[in-house]
Image (cartoon, rainbow, N blue to C red):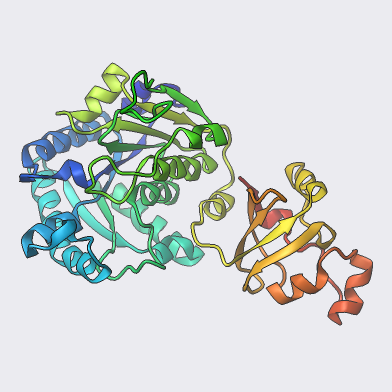
Length: 376
């Protein structure tokens, strides 16, 4: 059974495993921790478990909680050092809070703190998958956050929307529910008169991206609608549905699924697990620019040959994940390079018959083989 509407997120047959992401502004308001609201959400998680659904929580809030405790300005986001210090203090309070409230319903909380590299490196990604699977099999509720106390600007997700989508991939979830401070995706800025809520999206296109704003309405979190659309793209590659719903109300999950208020992104495809991981990667070592002929060939399922490559960006080694861009600069695929960047530059536009003389050894069958490539 496939997810077709928001109400299916509460159906164990259509959605046996759900990832729920909670934003900072939902947990921590201007008056401090919103404990009664969180108690209501935990009751909804308990109800989902009683229905037979696995639930994974991706919870923001550590920086906001820690900043309040330490008296840091700008919600703890004034500097990287402030954010790391706030996270170190706030994460203890956050994990303790989840453990306490879930425990009140007889549920066991399990904390996982992840960095970007934990889900970008293939071996560590598989380890995270194994850990999540074992925890869920044992009946625990994993509560996940980015490890902000050690993450830097260069090696971080930057928002928990994309983290939630990557966790959903690793956990083989059916859907992701992003609880935010808006009802969903609007056709324009929701503050503008006449803005319309979009109920369903079948594939995130350039037109859909044009509707988004990168700002967080609350000023508390690090994400906005742009990050949520990026999360939807990551989820879609793995055939995972993603919904955006307003979490500011009491019992926000029930409001979304029973009243159908929110935006549901329905995937158009489902890549194999390894290709889904590759397509969802957020950090790439470089890029290859291809001509229109090569772009069309890739769309038909072909490998990328050197003849169609017109440019090389970045410094990468054989086996590194890279982007493949068309002439307009649009990323059309991710792939694992068969050559170092310097070798790719030497092979630009050449036929396979010429490459042995250039390289000094027999060339490989492609610059990026189709088995190591996923279209976006």
